Image 1: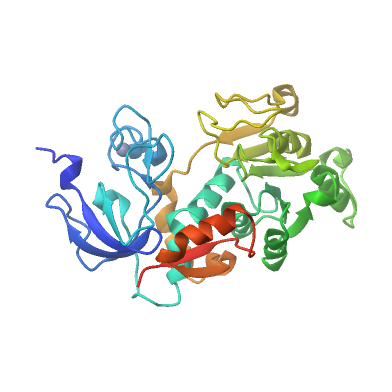
Image 2 (image 1 turned 120 degrees about the vertical axis):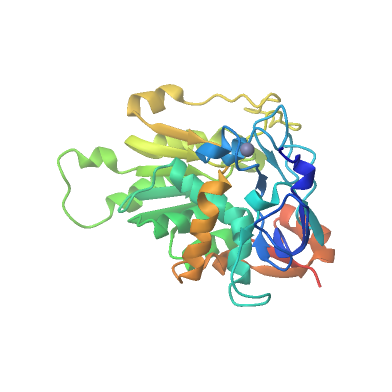
Length: 350
Ligand SMILES: [Zn+2]
């Protein structure tokens, strides 16, 4: 007899999606009280039609009648946020990623990024098919964008360009070794083309047509800013730029969030039902492969954990602030207003 989801619970004391297991339900077998675990943002059962294929972001059981569920995301079920002192974890055996070590060790800030931003960034590089020696451009240098660029580096990309409009993010991109592109200083597509044209060395015949990038990533989503009027949104801005920038035969990974309904559509270009004008013909004529969607955490979490354990990756380099959970409302307010240089904040619970 199969136990229902309510019997597959664990409760964890958490700091931003990770913590120590406090208690487990009777149907939980693998996870034990005292385990140190991280919780991916998307919740999944681990065994349904989609989960069994690794497509865990489209789990068919966690939010019945829908493909996929997540903590505190619009349209993804009744689950409350995982930034809390205690979190109820459905399907705990599938969702809890067990971590080595102990509280307060050097890997804490790295592990917590498996809960959300790093898997999103890694997934973006999967969608964009990033391969060794690729040229890659990531639009958006927030946490997921920076970690997409970082993942591209880990996968052996030859050149990684990071595009944004905010000083602190551009500075962080440079600090991490990406080529920063400030979109306030002009068309980022032309800036990247110019940088690529300036590279020394001979070219293969016809290569001047390939001075864009082979892999482009949208880490912004529907709240993209109109480059000419940065105080206004234009959800078409990034896809239009990427369509111009990507080389013929290139690949795009669209990992920024697009919602089914936009409560506050941009005055020009925004659609309340989430539909957008996209330069389809440009993408078709270039033979571009386009990948979309939320991250299938189940495919990546243990691999990313092991990249940390093995010393190959330190994603915590993107973190700029450590705050207590009680200060979360203030941090979110300042983050929304883009003040105090917040790129990524960690919340801790005493
Ligand atoms: Zn499932």
